[in-house]
Length: 349
Image (cartoon, rainbow, N blue to C red; front, side):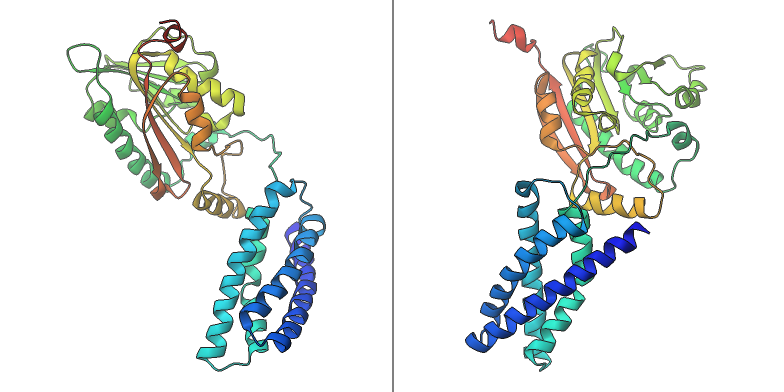
């Protein structure tokens, strides 16, 4: 029901805004005879009225003006250009009168404006404390995951082949996968990459049990029920990677989780970290999935590239980054090399 009340308030405000906008437009057009000048004058007056009403009355936003106003102004500018283009097309191309053309153009943009203001301007922070149910996730993997995993696996294998190398002369890698319960990457990596050891670390007992059957007869696979925040491994791996892990923590824990990758790496070893990033495509896709009630990762916090690289650079050098756009829930992939000498020692050299 909340969406209907929200839409009603938005509609009422939009109606009042439209009345003000069109009154100013009519007056300005009679004096100037210019569609562009009249559109600018009307939009400036309507913008101030609509911004205050939308922020306080419709969306009850508590965000600072410095955060919200630039996004709102950008939306108004884009909306104004689209409205102007529609008016010109209806007036010049179809021969409509200017005022009816404006009313139709604004009406067509109504729904788009509501969605953009709700989802991208006057946004609210989600306060839900609900955690992801990993048992349910591992038991019922979404059919679309087969496609996204195939693409992610190909990007991961490409990064490993390009950047990772073994410390020993036989060319086989010591690999640690963090957050790898029920790993979909294990088999492709074992088949395509030479491994002398493959350690899977996770806290989820059920997910690890799904891999337990592969232990029999394997000389390289080892399972560890540990948290990335409290790793107790002595391994000095050539490669440590995680996919879809570090976004499930608060900022300080995310920093700790990122740096834990380097704790089990040998100097010069490679860390590969993939995580969701809040592109427009990600936000639209996630909104749609949440709207149909199929979103499972309730504690997922999409991360900016800057936040993660700031943590990575405390321990290693970023070699490359790649945005995985085909996933729709856009992921960022970072490849980094651990410092050969700890930074604390570098400072004293």
